[in-house]
Length: 492
Ligand SMILES: Nc1nc2c(ncn2[C@@H]2O[C@H](COP(=O)(O)OP(=O)(O)OP(=O)(O)O)[C@@H](O)[C@H]2O)c(=O)[nH]1
Ligand SMILES: [Mg+2]
Image (cartoon, rainbow, N blue to C red; front, side):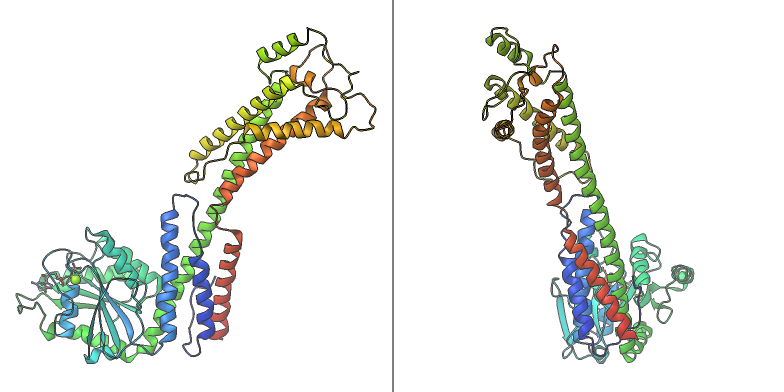
């Protein structure tokens, strides 16, 4: 699968269509089968879909729109203060309570359209005619690390849809794990990053050097190096930093605005790389799902096989029916011998005597039910076994009908057939005086096995109903190949 490549911005309609088809194929995945990774798999599905629909698509439609920039970082690092200071007015209220910013604030030019598409999120929009906004649109985001977990999700959704990230941290927070999991992810997909060390003082030189070292180790080359903003004391009532504090950041953003096209392309590449790696992980998750389905189906098959085997053994030993029923039947026949090899069942006459037929049906039904319950119990122990629909019971009625049907039919087939037919009765009561009527037993077992097979297939259907259809997986593979082919064609 493709990593990344140059994405030309002229004539992107074919590429856009290929990405749209990929988004549809990804969005169609259900991940209905339970699994330890299901929540993550679904989140990844939604994320990949959103990156295509809300980053790539709007960018292909508005290639000329400003570079989309997110300001992100830990709570209280001064993100909102910095955005306000760039604007020269309060566009995103800053505060002493943590966390402060709960929803993204988009600061953009009056006339700018296009990315980032945040229509599915609750946002505030601040329109302005600040000269910086001709080249960049800036989004202040909620924190990545406060108690309010939803903030991180919202911030990451924004990060997925911008071309560049201004990461704001402080000498106290720069090494936090939360920050680094985001920085590593951004670095991994190649998103350009501006790193701001806010509230720097003469005593925090060591922090700046250490931060630069950590970035270097992570393979991240921040635009303009580590941009320091000095700690200010007090300040105006509106909490804005004096111009001089953000001068360096302004000039980095102006350079970004000048090289707009390059950053837009890098944004597309980062998003594409995220889509490719995300799709790869989804395909792996589907492979895991396929394996789990196979295991669950094979559990049902094994349980049914072993129950059928037990039944066959009981039958062989003449112990399938309850002994009191058998004795009652033998007594009712006056203790006479069982119909032997000379017995000829009349055409259409069932070979299992009526008195035994009901008991046989009851016993087979009970064994089927035991197999059903054992299947459910074994499934419950499997990581993907929860949430499956309950298995339908094979009813006594169905068992009766099937046994009677085969019984009469097999005799019926004997029309004009002169050879003596062994009755099923001695198979059932297992008269030890007789030679074992193997053929007869096999015939009866075959009918019972048919009932077990039917129930086992129904169990498999319950599992298969929760799997993503094979067709969907094929569509996904085709869609990703089509995007790759497009990118290869276009970059040639
Ligand atoms: N004294 C001083 N306070 C600052 C400085 N920078 C930011 N602050 C204060 O730090 C607090 C947090 O600033 P915010 O801009 O709200 O921080 P944030 O990163 O947007 O925080 P969240 O919205 O919670 O993610 C505010 O009370 C700011 O006034 C500074 O350089 N000096
Ligand atoms: Mg804020």
